[in-house]
Length: 152
Image 1 (cartoon, rainbow, N blue to C red):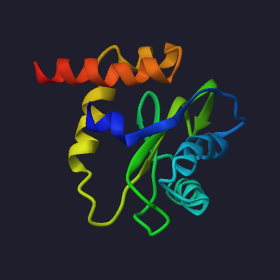
Image 2 (cartoon, one colour; image 1 turned 90 degrees about the horizontal axis):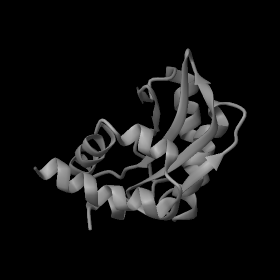
Image 3 (cartoon, rainbow, N blue to C red; image 1 turned 180 degrees about the vertical axis):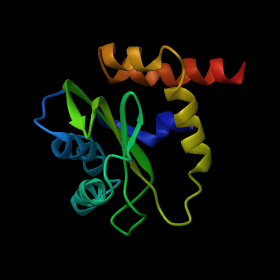
């Protein structure tokens, strides 16, 4: 099992979320962190406030945002969550369909996990796959497939 699979707790992927704006998109992604016990609701609001302060710096690829905030004690353990939006929302002048949320702790060595996440997400077919995946099990299976491709 890949570290990435462990980082997404069961139920942390919400596929088919309808939201009106980027703030609610971040909150939807944050729901997976809160539900899995990886972060508090305060952390989720801190992610929203971070974008309000610094702009849409969290857009990391066309159609993809990675919500996060400064390391805080509101993060209970490291992990990821995902909200796939029914309709894209504007993050500044960019439309986003996939919003990941990241929870990281002080002293937690998450650099390898971030590298695995980046390698998985940047596979050429990955974004299209995520936009069309039927359920969480399909996404989880893609972690193992990607791990094998990256190792080649």
